[in-house]
Image 1 (tube, rainbow, N blue to C red):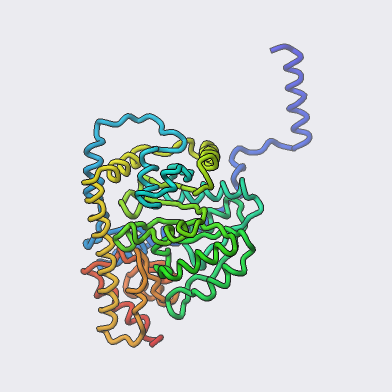
Image 2: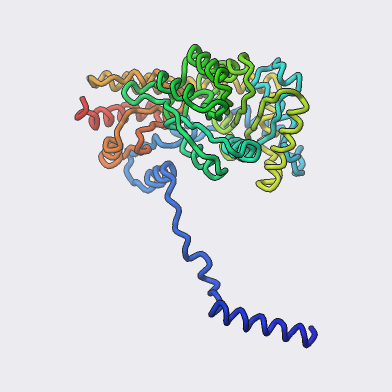
Length: 428
């Protein structure tokens, strides 16, 4: 180091000290950071684990459980893993992910013989499950429709708000759930769709609405699609439960198919967390329907460009599992049987919970339990009633009254029904 350089550095240090005062302590950089608020669902899980009661029940969990309350790995997944073992390299996937997985996933959402797929009009990339697909689309929306906002249903999965907020998209809400009937507030929903500015973005749940379990009927979906056409709105579908809702993937994709029949250019987030039990593998897909192949190529390139600084490329193991299952006729048949089995267990627990409540003589109506669909039941319980369930009966769920039907078993459904009956007596 030259004498001149050394002198320059000394002068800079002196100047900085004089201007800024004493140097910042290395331990003070993050003193202003406060603890983030706890996620309400994770908080329920933590409280459940800490409870020593032998009678405790967790109906807050957002993952499928068998009738013994245990996590499930599907046999089709086990077989796919057996085929993979020792036969897969660990190279990076392309930024857009596994082409085979994406191809099979599009068939699931848009139809095996979809002309959109044949004409290469869908831009699609593998994503980090449904959450990653939503976030990738939100960033795409911000970049290419910077002045737009997103209409989100009330209520919705809480993370939807976080995703579009962190993508800096202004949020508006539209009516969806009707607390008094425990069903769909269809007239108010349609009014909000009609009154939104032309060309607005709307977030829609394709099936098994989370957290309410309330879905529009096929006729209502057709009316919604028609009104979207009139207003020129863009529909972005979050489809986290295809196959898991009714047991039939085709039926669960009906809302999307109706929009496609009407000529909409839609977006769709798909996930294999629930319907294949691949929660920790984070396998999903984001797709955007385009006007033609040229536009689809451009859109896909931009989606990949957005993914590059986020996570560069998606994980390979889960994508290969999905590809094997969906492309092998025997394994796909087994998956369809297993996913129907999961859906049927949930439907059966809905029937059992309602019947147990009615047998206890509750004058309240519990028909919404069996009218709703999917993993979650929006019970109508108040926060105070939920608190009593937890404090008096060691039953854990979120304070909005959302019951995960996956946590209900033949062994605890009677206990759960009796507890609900007791805490709702004052409302009878």
